[in-house]
Image (cartoon, rainbow, N blue to C red; front, side):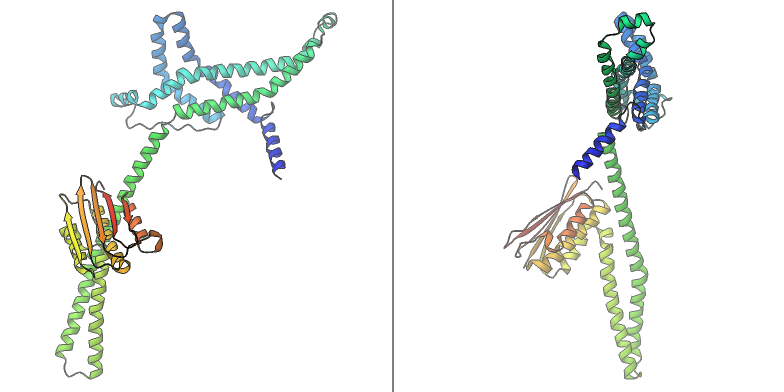
Length: 415
């Protein structure tokens, strides 16, 4: 089956490059169209060879015609080769002084002139060779027809065995020309993509920057939405539950003549209202604690340390507050890390250090537990990695068996 597949591909490839195939004529038309496009550069070279002093005007003409030549070349690739060479985006219009200066300083502009002055003449020479190859191959392959057109008395005198060699050579040249045209078209397309289009490395850098900005905007928007939900729950739903609990407490205290069954119902409702308030408080704190927004990371982490089920030594040194998104990530990183310590580490103590050095917020969580923390073991460390990675941060986990476990997180403060 493999041999038959390879044979089928080879047969299809030979058919695609046959002298009468559409691909052969498309490649021929494309390479032939490069001949007139090479005239400006050829003129510069001719003037330079004939009179070096007169080369400057011709070179200036090519520089002025550069944008038009680029448009024509893109059209040649699009219409004849079905290859789209994307245009280079510029911030300002070329008719303005700022736009003209931008193009003169642009690296893409000079890459285009490299194509017009170097690649385009070579492509024109290649197109001329393709035309000569087709014409020469047809002339040689039809040598017997040319000889038959001669008068009878002259036909016999010129009839030699060399005609057989010439005919075979012409046929081979006709078979080889489509391959040569296709190869020239491929090389030209590769050069055009590298020189006429935008710089791929710069384009990738720009896309990465755009994606980073978009993700930062999404994170900020998500953080703002969490804070809005937190305020709505705290200011509306939680306050109503508090009022309900107070009313039930007042009813339980003042309505002493109620039947025992009614008192039991009021007691149960009061207890569940207080539990709902506590659960809602935990939910609000998990969305976005108000103390984090009002008093900063130090106060918010102090609340986490106070609620932890084991002694936590907290040290926070922040000369300047980080951005809201990074601050929220830092808060939840410490919260999840302490939850992991309490659940899995079997530790007696824990230390949390938060330091800001330049544009990096470094968080270190150390516990004296049993160690052996493995991100693949379902201990919550995978969630930590994802949360840290959401702001392009890094996390390092050092947890040998027997402990201690040290989790170091670095968050960029530029967000």
